[in-house]
Image (cartoon, rainbow over all chains, first blue to last red; front, top):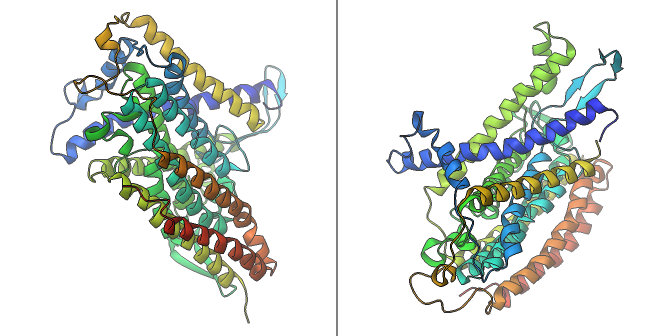
Length: 386
Length: 123
């Protein structure tokens, strides 16, 4: 947990703050979703409680707390309670492994008569070299929560909803995993921070072994992997069980899917899990394809030098830079979250056979083609053939 | 900070947070009143015909098996993809590409066979 008490306590606070960030963004997203759907469908949405209906969420939260805790007596009681708790885990763990901003560098300083060495705090819950593999592995654990909920409810609608959700999640995980191979071929690393560093500056690529620079475009992954980005984003919709892939919750056939028997706070926890998954998906899209926490064309060092120009000390400039870049990343994340909501209220849902066909027979072959073409292009461009 | 400790810490925090929510809700909410009607599985106004633990279509099982096969094959591509640039920069690009091309060929043949044998047809 770090070398001394200062580092350990800062790291613990950091993890808790990132977790609370994920939990706290859910009410905001629920509000945006309600207002957004009302806006799209030409309605008002919540507008009575507080300005623009913002405090509606507090009222909802209080109401959730005072709901009756009901367990169907034929259900499996332990699994019934465990499923919503487990639904929280994948989103929280995956979100904490994504770098939310540039690392903070703290110079040596004196406090309580002791000198504290220079520190480096990454703006993420935990740094690991295999970031992508960890995120993929942990987010697929979400399927367990759904299956547990479906099995424990002892209700055929819940069970079929859970089975569908599970089959859908694992089918689209293939397209998701394969779409990522293309971007890995470009960056050559599993580490998120290195990917973000790669995307600094203007677009520059190799053509027949010579470097070409396009000054009017940023060096973002989307320009290397347009097909991969589209496939990844579609697969993310399926992974989060959002419309048009919300077959597990198709009201006309399955009532409410795997959470038919759930209510109150247990239901809310499934929602936190789903929105947490959306948050991770948006953060991944921003990190892989849209420059992560960096502004287009402007490197982290340039931002740091800009703030240092105001006469801040190195430590303060580093802290201000980290928070400024955090705002940049969150703007990108919120844009993607808005796309999630926008699509939900625009597109109708698929039929189940269409959904499986899209996953296995369309997206998987396209992702495969994307991998092969990317590999061939990297080989062609990087090698001096003559 | 070792990532493993941080992961265990955050996982524990998340589980505790969820359990605490459940506990608070059971303290504050009214005691549930059970009756035979309320206790039965949810159904749209009819008598309950079958419970959730009855037969499950074998299709889901088949999908899961195929998923495991393909997922392992995709995981094999990850180390290849990450080291690809190094090989290309050192001039072994054709070698590393053709090695994976053989693997991808088997992958594609498997996918075609799977589609032809109607393992992925949903009625």
